[in-house]
Image (cartoon, rainbow, N blue to C red; front, side):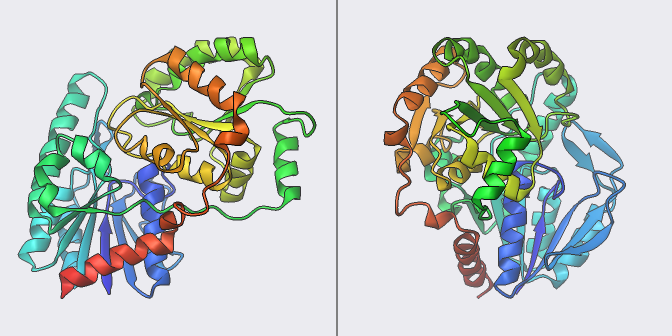
Amino acid sequence: MRILIALTYYRPHYSGLTIYTERLARALVKKGHQVTVLTSRFDSSLPAHENADGVEIIRLGVLMRLSKGTIMPGMPSAATRLAHRADVVNLQIPQLDAAPIAVTSRLLGKPVVVTYHCDLHLPPGLVHSAANQASHLANHVSAAAANRIVTNTRDYAENSPFLRRYMQKLVVIPPPVALPLVTGAEIQGFKKRWQIPESGSPVIIGMAARLAAEKGVEHLIEAMPTILSKHPDARVLFVGQYLGVLGEEAYARKLQPLIERLGGAWTFLGILSSKDLTAFYRSCSLLVLPSLNGTESFGMVQVEAMTCGVPVVASDLPGVRHPVQSTGMGCIVPPGDSQALAGGILEVLGNLKEYSSTPAAGLEEYAPEQVAGRYEALFEELVR
């Protein structure tokens, strides 16, 4: 089957959406499908065309940016050409270009599947407001034209003002999660590099995210004094992009002095290789996901941590709470409440054995081959 996947950013851009799409595209290729990804050349040093892991990647030049969105003059013609030769079109949204691609694909007689990742909540400001409205309109046009709409959980869909309007088209498919195996020596090497003691039981609080306002990083910072009063050796390891995050420069400047006050209790690790990411999870006491709003619809990092036997403290948000509720590996706390977050972290730290038991079943459905199989069945049904 020839599958066209379109989205604004693809790897090496770092976000949950790009990681999701990369895992899905690779898994579909392994099942024997021809997958083309149409995306932006957000960094001019990236090749306009390449093949990575069997996935054909076509990157279009960016004329200008509208908040976190991109304006690509070459998109209409490229999308029309690629949709014409595809059997099915998958749009990963939100993205500004989704609407014309969806409409054009349907006019060409091609089935369209929209994968809806989240309700967009941009910071205040004229440009952000314009981008939010444009994205909202594009999402509605895309959803109206789509044959099916895929989302991670029914919990999120039922609480999303956007998705509630399209429940008759809804298909729930969990996100793809995969981590490579690592040896004990590789974990020891990781700990040595980041000065994590091998002896004793150091309290390592992990967070894996971009440094972005919707992630609620300030609430983990504000929770740390309470945690340090009970666990003086506690330390946060923050994995993910923290420098030059698009549209988050003011947020980073706001957090910088707060993080500096924590001194050695906070360490930025940056973007890790896949093996180092596994070693990171296996070095953590727990993982924290203090997200604030519907821009976070799930949080794949939770399942990644759980597959390594690491419990999670997550915000009580639709979709985000699903992994903890379905596995019992952690607790959920009200979003935006620093003291509740501190209380949740202390609760899990005080009962690590109870919360660290990896369930025998329940995590297998997140394997990329399982997720790709469900997409494959959906695509074949629509093509028929």
